[in-house]
Image (spheres, rainbow, N blue to C red):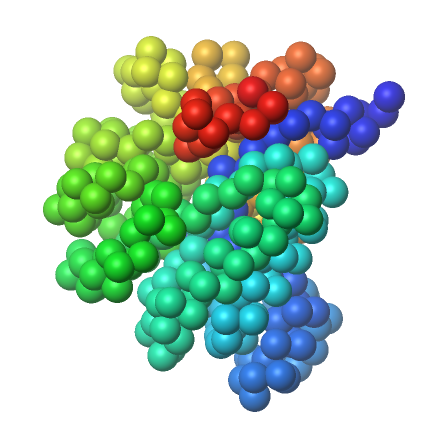
Length: 326
Ligand code: ES4
Ligand code: ZN
């Protein structure tokens, strides 16, 4: 069996996927036309050509511009259905989707419109593909904690439909400590907690995410390697890291995939997973992330199996609900 087939056959969970980051330029243009929205690019080809990033912020500027094409419940439904079809083809059996409500409510799209569309797709994906899924609301860390509280207010009436909260967007200069009160409130509401940390930001931000936000997983976390005491702690506590290798290359966190520290983290005993982050922008869904990383870092099939199993174990699906994959 070739490596691609082997990877596809591994049951896996995707735990780090921004649904707005799965908006392919073709769908972006189709939605923009349908909705009468003007995009900053002239064509699908020009859009793809603009996807050359120097850091996280240079990507985020385009990502927020592209998200402007999403207006109606049906748009969010179609976006997520396209993702689920693609994920199913890659052997994903469970997906925990990040969504950024503030990106949409700022433009006048109602919180409920976003949630209704995404949830309808989650229900449909269960029927059509047998994929279980969860929704994780991410707060934009470049905005204030008060703006986060305002978003949480909008989410509270729908809290049973939201499984967890996360923290994304521009990391540098926006440490987890900025959101300590907001996340304390989220914990009181019984929500699962994750946060992006140690993507571009220092290892100290990972420590803050653990100690102040009390995260159950770290999104990215690759810069943990710079702090041996932190690595030791993450190993001891078996805190999952949702690593996104192709994202890290596109955003220049590592110069090439050969330079990525995923194998180093795995060898140290960390609970590493592989995910796609924003596949429409970074040039690969989860299967491609597994394959390219396996080839660049010479991962064995046993290691790939371990990584896929880590993703199932690190998911927020409770024991009672576990489907045959665990
Ligand atoms: C993101 Cl790669 C990445 N990092 C931080 N925030 C994000 N939002 C969407 N993709
Ligand atoms: Zn991310």
